[in-house]
Image (cartoon, rainbow, N blue to C red; front, side, top):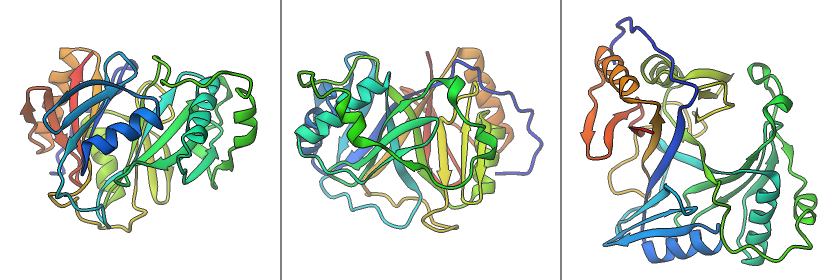
Length: 287
């Protein structure tokens, strides 16, 4: 990426996240996990591919590569967030995990949201989240320290008298993705000056960016160590994630900013793909 001055245009407030596409080693095993443990619905199955969601547009696309190796100390996916439309729906998701005896890695209260963390069968990171009302969010620019523990028992108690829900709520969406990168400064330049996000929170080893004042659509960190290389070919994990733009004019403006920065878009049937400085791929499409 060159040091050219780029005329930055911020993304429209309606910008949102779309489907996340992952490499997995066994698509049958992964589909069973996402259906049973997370309550997703399979929209389509074809050779070595499965598209899942909440009954509307695709939220997750799984691509099978039986020879793919496990993720290591390189750039790539930290987790993607399946955002539930309410705290009650997150509680139902927690009850589903308990009923299916699905192990979790942690549960946190971030002030802005409550979250449960777990891996899929290949170790791809997942966050199940529900946002608090925006009026209750703390000042994102001065966030410090770690999150508080999530009161998981209290969350489960809120749905203890309900019949189990097999499927996720139709209002579930992809809320954000969080990535491992090699360099915070280069990544911030890309996501702000090229893509058009705003920095919402800047920590010593992580940055969170968003459009429209959201807490974050994309997070990126150097927790695997600064300078980690891009993910090697043939590795499980992120293939690309999707950013949904407002209209074609915004997509054209993005192409122009990318080319001015020396980042050539890769045209695909689904839309142009840009790669951040650590090789993480973003697919852009319009609503």
